Length: 132
Image 1 (spheres, helix red, strand yellow):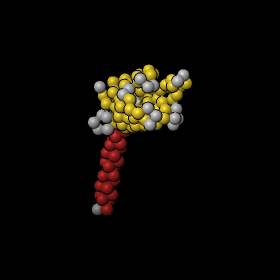
Image 2 (cartoon, one colour):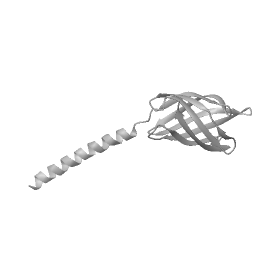
Image 3 (spheres, rainbow, N blue to C red):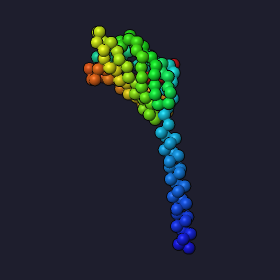
């Protein structure tokens, strides 16, 4: 009888492990952020602006283009890990190159919200992006 209980418990443990690993793989899948995005960016240095970006996604890698009256036109690179998105590019501010970093989370409705950091803290703020 004791042997049957051990086999039964071992079977349940194996089934639980398989289900748990499967759930972890599903939750680790990255969101799809490819396409055109309209943004609203608020910084203490520049108020609120409305840039746009177009993203191309290849697995976890992002490329694309950014367009803003404040930061100009730039080619972008980035990554997607689960629902977390990071986008980088270099802007020209008064003739000086300035690295720009957007970090966001994409919610269940597909809205991207997060932070912007320009030139390592020279200007920071928040943003929201929605698909066009």
